[in-house]
Length: 208
Image (tube, rainbow, N blue to C red):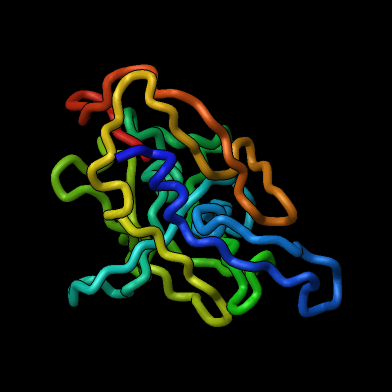
């Protein structure tokens, strides 16, 4: 399957010309993959530690606390190097909360910002990591609990099934490089090519 054909399968959504406050907004169609990308801010005691990108998937398993899971990198939630376990921030602080900038319900192109707790009262992480490889797979899922007034544009994990990715395959990456955003909260698209064979790394971390 052609990767560009898959990208064309994403739906587009019409954004309102003005926000609920009357301010000018986006009067355009927005690609679904753009809306699925969420701007994240990791925090420790309300102090910002860093920014990242995430997206939402849905699950139906009864053992999962929420049917909406935020997928991001393990190091974003833990605030630690997946190789060494050392804190990533120069202060040594690790996040206790994650601020998520969601799409506002009924108004693509406007946003609702909420804060999700990363640990329960006993200090146990609320996110889930790989059951076998743990932090070696630098991916984790956080159940979402603060969804009032939020539109959840879910990523379909099966959308890319059958795509052959190899060296020189052109790919598009959607997210917030260096914390950059467009029009207040929309993700930025960058383009490149696969530079090495895709594989599951046995001795170093994997990523999305």
